[in-house]
Image (cartoon, rainbow, N blue to C red; front, side):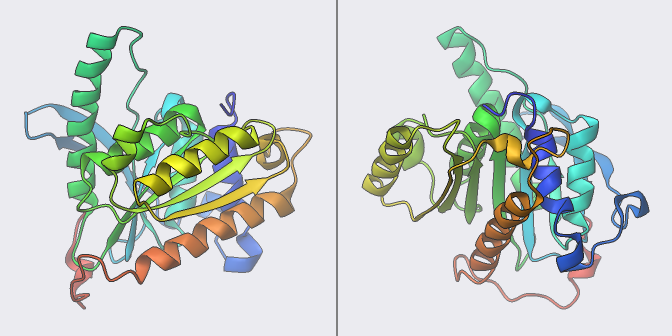
Length: 260
């Protein structure tokens, strides 16, 4: 739905708050990530990119949709990790047009998502899935449904609002929706809100009467104030998730020893 600007959008959200959060320049790569190979319970091996401090109390599973693990996605993961979040990002590929093939693909993707969430989990850490664009936001919901007991927050940025009630019923976390008027008609957003509330999912919605191009640093319509406001809403949501007493566990002082 973001038409190729999604990775730039979220990179901009992190980048525009440099002065507010005293971030190092991206070239410093304060928490430069690394590629890690994981394996599902069924034995399938796959690669993820990991960034951010191991002592972080919020773990973000970033789902870039069609973008995959491209340079913009990796740079975004490094930037968000530098703000104190433990980050794991993976590319799940494209869905098949055929229903039976799509079902098999969904099963494989769910296994990958569960393995990634399990790896990202640590005592005292809350897990949030974060997807953007039509594909990535839907994957964020699917990942939360794949491991509902370990995911505390689900972020949908400009997409995912066509999710069916059956998928929403599988999600057991608070949901943040960031939508834009030019790509999400208000009736579509209202329909999603109604479906989510029928399933009892706690829902926070921020609806911007602008084009998502306003948050694209590569475009002539970029507006840093809008980008910073959106990222601020995401950070506020992360703070709420951090203090949720859901599956509470003592926060260990020696979490620095964790490698995940």
